[in-house]
Image (cartoon, rainbow, N blue to C red; front, side):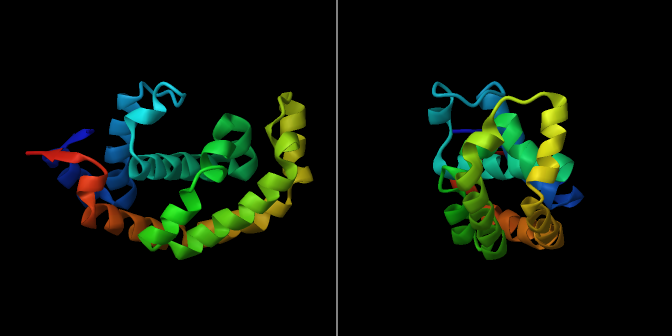
Length: 166
């Protein structure tokens, strides 16, 4: 089980929801040595994978949107796993719906979205996949509320995410 220092958790929670969640995901990334692969995947449970996928999702969407998320290799981790279903169970229903909508686009264009690209081809994908723009705008509108819902769920079910050491 992943262990997190209680003082670290309390300090992070006073800084904000993102910081609170990052204490968990930082510990997960440390446990898997920053690498998601068939060897490290079993080191985390389903809830921990959901939270880590949320971290990758938010970081990538904030920086470069769905195209970047997929091009950086997180498409399958986000869309081919029960990530959206878990978010719905956590109460983040709006985000869950958004992920399902993005998954439809991803599934229909997977080979194109995941192919190796030059920087020029990568940049052109933003034009080719403008369909993601509306979803990204929706995400930015709901991000704070949905993050609060997820953080509340984690706080209420903390033992499913880590062992808190006093």
